[in-house]
Length: 151
Length: 151
Image 1 (cartoon, rainbow over the protein chains, first blue to last red):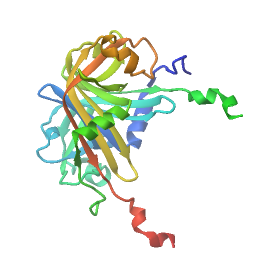
Image 2 (image 1 turned 30 degrees about the vertical axis):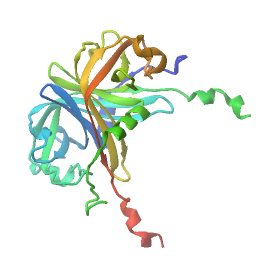
Image 3 (image 1 turned 45 degrees about the horizontal axis):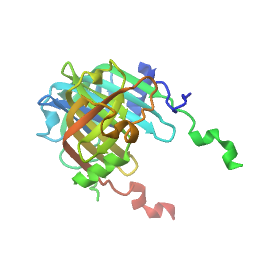
Image 4 (image 1 turned 120 degrees about the horizontal axis):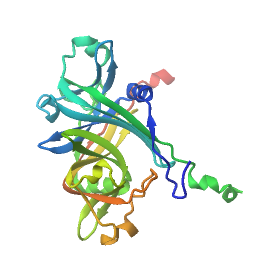
């Protein structure tokens, strides 16, 4: 449903839907503030839900900015459809901290397997205090309102 | 070129390439810190290069978190190919501040045209002090190394 400008209304995603989307994706973006200035870095990740922690797990290089944890962090995944002006996004906010990959069988079952090479053997996790999501339903592309154009 | 794990090496994008990608995209993500905790919000934007300012321009609602500018911000665009494990991303860091849409013919020529409805008539811009980009070239999908599987 779109208005005359093709804009639609943002709708909240419920927590179950956010968790499902987090489980199904493997690439997201981490934001942290360095000297009070935010930056955003794409990362490979795994969403880990165990009987113990719920974590967004990622791997980085020794000495990377992210390794200066613990620190507040945001993590975001999304999908964008420019044709229909539709999108969804999930935002996780929490504390980024270093973890032991041997704990909770992480290395065996939840390796984020970075696409970028190099020794990314520092394992980090964001422990969420906040998970939320939104969907923009978009609409039918405007040309579809003009079937006569194809007759 | 990928190693045995299918990982490839991150390569820097030069400034011209970053600017070209910023001009061609219309959806990105803004990160700001609120009470020291970062958050990430997808936004429609336009990259404005005039004889005067270079700006990432966006529109938001009156009273939104972003309106509490000026404040430090990061802005990111990317494209991700999960099949080839390839990706690129561009990161802009700067100060987010409120702007007058009537200045520099912004409203006429550089309207970010938000996909989300509602009165998004507060115009904001990030004035970059830093633009950088990276590309992960990825590789041929692993099945392509096994042509005999299709004989």
